[in-house]
Amino acid sequence: MNEHREHFLTTSIRMYSLYQTALSLCSVKRLNELIDALLPHCITAMDVATACLLTREGTIHIMGNKLRDLDEEYLRRQSWQASEGCIHGNLPSYSSYLASPILQETKYLGTLIVVDKEASAFEVEDFKRMTNLATITATALGNVYEYEDLIQKAEGLEEDIKRREELEVQRLRQELEDAKRTQLSLLPRQSPQIEGFDIEGVCLPAQQVGGDFYDYVPLGDDTLAIVLADVSGKGLKSAMYAVLSYGILHAEAKFGILPSQMLWILNEDLQARIRERMNCAMCIATIDLNNRILHYSNAGIPYPIVKRGGGVFELKCNGIPLGMLKSAEYEDVEIELQSGDVVVFLSDGITDCPSKDDPEEQFYGDSQQLFSVIGGFDPNTNAQTMIHSILTDLRDFAGDNDQNDDITIVVVRVR
Image 1 (tube, helix red, strand yellow):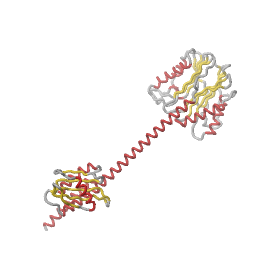
Image 2 (spheres, helix red, strand yellow):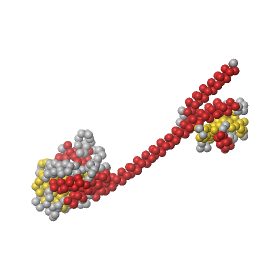
Image 3 (cartoon, one colour):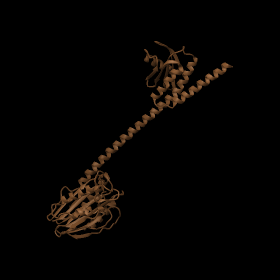
Image 4 (tube, one colour):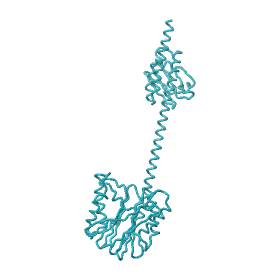
C-alpha cells in the first residue's frame, strides 16, 4: 500500500514538475531565452553533467559542468539518427548520452541531448522523462520559431514599407522639381522696356510648388497686357493647369478686347477642358501706352494697390476664379495713370502670409504694413527696389515661418 502511495506521489510530483516546466518554457519567445531556461532544467531533471540542444539550422548549444573534449560533430551526427526516436550510447571521455528528437507532429525542429548521467546508466524512466522533455521543448521551440518567423516577416514588411515610402518621397521630389521647372518656364525672361514705364515682376515658388505665374502679353504696338495668375492646388497637376491657362491666354488675347472679355473666354475654355475640381485665380490689366489708360479685370486675385502722390488705395474689382462657374461674368475698372503712380499687383501668397507673432490669426494682408511700405515708395525709386522693399518687410513679418504659398509681385511705375 505504501509502495503504491509513494509511486502515486512520485508520479504526481513529476507530472506537476512537467506542467510547471511546460508553462515556463512555452511562455518564452526568443531562442536564447529558451536555451537559458531549458538546458539547466534538463541537467537537473535528468541528473546529468551536460545538456545540449541542436536546432533545425544545425547549431548546437551546450551547457554543463563537463565539457572536456566534447565531440560536437559526433553529437550532431547522432542527433540526426535520433530523428525517428530516442537513442543512447557512449561518447569518448563520457559515460553515456541520451538523445531525443524534437518533433512538432512530423516536423523536425531539432534534437535534445543529455550527456554523462551522474548516478548511474540511463534507465527506462530516463527515456520517458527525456521524451516528455522533448515534447515540451517541441511546443516551446515551435512557438519560438513561429514568433521569430513573424518578427522576420514584420521586419521584412517594415523594410518594404520603408522602401515604398522612400520611393514615394523620391517620386514626389521629382514631381516637385518638374512642377517648379514647368512653373518657371511660364515666367517672362525679361521685363518689358517701354518708354515712360518701369515694369518689374518676381515669382518665388513655395517649397510645395503651387501654380503662380505672371506674364506680359503685347497686344499690338501700343497696348500691353499684364497677367497674374494663381492656380489652385500644389505640385505637377497644378503646374499643368497653369500651362493650360497660359496657353489659352496667349491664344485668345487679342487687341481691342477688354480684360473682362479675356477672362470670360478663358473661363469658358477651361470649363470645357477641365473635369477635375481645379480653378485659376487671375487678373488681367491692359495698359494703353500712348494714353496711359489702364483697364483691369479680376477673377479672384487680391486687389492691386495704387500709390498716387501721398495716398494709397485699392483698385477694387471682384470676380470668381476661372473654371468654377460656367458663364461667369467679369467687370472692368478703368484708371488714367499719372506720372509718379505706382501700381502693385500681387498674389495671395503675400496677403495670406501668417505673422510670426500670431500665425493662426494675423496675416500680412490684414495689417497696415503693406500699405505703409507701398505708401512710402519714392516715385524716383526703380520698380525692382520697390519689390525688394515689399519682400524684406514680408520676411520680417513672417519671421521663421515656412513659405507655404507662392509669392508673386508685379510693379508698374509710371515715370
